[in-house]
Image (cartoon, rainbow, N blue to C red; front, side, top):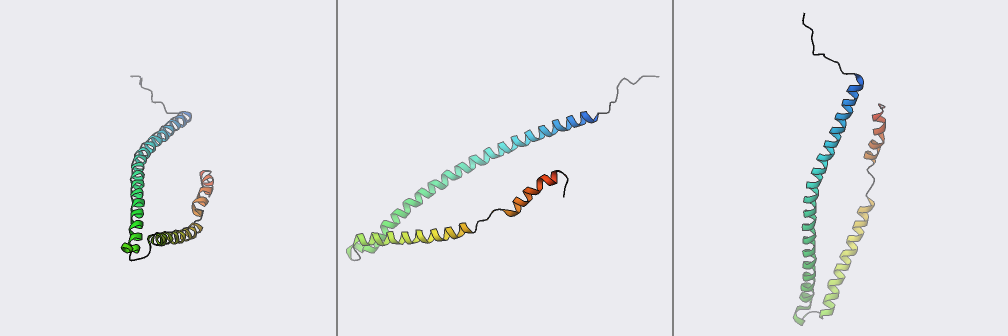
Amino acid sequence: MAIDTARTEEPTIGRLIKDAQTEFSTLIRKEIQLAKSELKVSVNAGGMGIVLLLAAAFLLVLAVIMFSIAAAYLIHWNGDGLALHWAYLIVCGFYTLLAVLLTFIGIKKFKKVKAPEKAIEQGREIPRALKGQS
């Protein structure tokens, strides 16, 4: 009769728990590394997007200035219209009224902002769910 030298040990509960903790820890570390690498790519793309949007906004501000001067000279109409200083005041008044209107609309929109009540409620239920409570 041959003696079987290869012992087939069954893992103990302690060994299984230790292995599970190790695997879980490794999984969490890998997930964090993946999230970091994805965020790095997103931040780089987002940063370039912000730079391009800021450049476009700067050019738009320059265009508004040029438009304002052109509008004032249009009102002045080579001396046949209003005096140049009145033309500039009219353009300035128009922008001031537009700014006031946009401010009021913006304030109305801000007053409609509310807390994410459903998400907060679900967040409060997470600890109970982890404990096995309904």
